Amino acid sequence: MRFDVVTLFPELFDPFLKVGVTRRAYSTGQVDVRLWPLRDHADNTYRRIDDRAYGGGPGMVMLVEPLERALAAIRQDRAEAAPAAPVILFSPAGTTLTQSRVQALAASHGAILVCGRYEGLDQRFIDRHVDEELSLGDFVLSGGELPALTLLDAVTRLQPGVLNAAASHEQDSFSDGLLDCPHYSRPETLGDDAVPPVLLSGHHAHIAVWRRERQLELTARRRPDLITAARQAGRLSRADELYLSKIRL
Ligand code: 9WO
Image (cartoon, protein in one colour):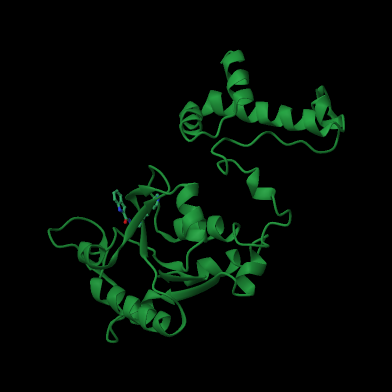
């Protein structure tokens, strides 16, 4: 799969692509990330990619023409080598990114990610070319690069072979729509704080029940909306429902 990223700051991506469990997927091209520095598509005389906003006000707007030239170059390059892909823009005005959208993108041919800077893009580029606006939540950043990196990470860790234990993401928060259970490692006791004894018992069935109950308890306390959604999707067993009916929140 291939992601094309339009950005004024391509150097932000390089260090990120070289670390962690996702590094191999990027270096082999299993997830092919191509950076398109917007400055390369500026007009030759002044290298401008931004200008003042019509109507006045502080801050600069990203010019539509350099963005369109960058997108045309990407589309031409993809035409020879990769299937068509949606244009995604990161903005607080978008729909919130979810694990289910991540899973769909992870099974796709990729996307063209546009990273905004300054006050944002000329609306006409969005109207003409952007297929999807995605938000990470209700806060404002100084650019779309961190959201783009977030999406790349979320998609890449789902690629075959990226997580060492094949089943490792089946236990993730959200893979079954519930929050994850707590994790413990050495030492067995830390001052007054011991590891829950069941985890040292070697009794795998009891451990699985304990973990499921911790997931249900944490989710019911912190994200009751996720319990409702899991119930409606038929992802809660009779045993899950029995446990939930017994706990006092
Ligand atoms: C900013 C903005 C604020 C309120 C409503 C809509 C908005 N759109 C943008 C926008 O496109 N901003 C550009 C990208 C330029 C300024 C920095 N940008 C940005 C993206 N800031 N914050 C985000 C962002 C993206 C995804 N999730 C949270 C924040």
